[in-house]
Length: 152
Image (cartoon, rainbow, N blue to C red; front, top):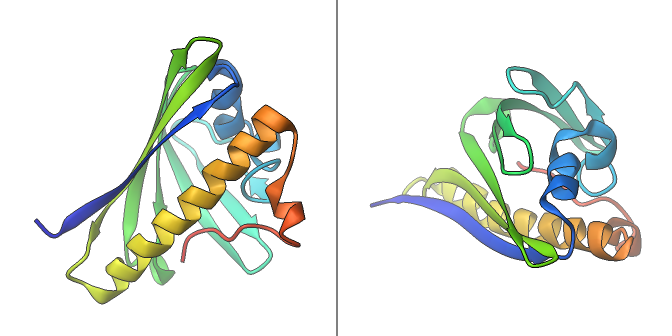
């Protein structure tokens, strides 16, 4: 099979409820991901995530409180490739396990292979910043002298 999915798992000290809010509240999401968000991040709505160098849409498909978030968004310019992201939250002791899945990416196509590589790197950075923000009140974007880029 040529389809690949980004699959990452992280342990956080934050509760599932706090992590869920960080993905579904525009104010909370701007503390760790996109610096500006237009829209509600509510199921059935389209929001726009804005970075200094780009803006992109996000269609929230599902938001099951404290358990699961699912959305679609474009990885290539002109919406040439759209992936579906699923974030599942599981309580573990005093913290949580977060599982993220993004895809599919057809790695036989050069542009999607490039997008897959960027997705792995981008999600690794984003989840590191999510953990730093929630568990340690540190925004890694500021330490790196800017904001972490989004897809594309």
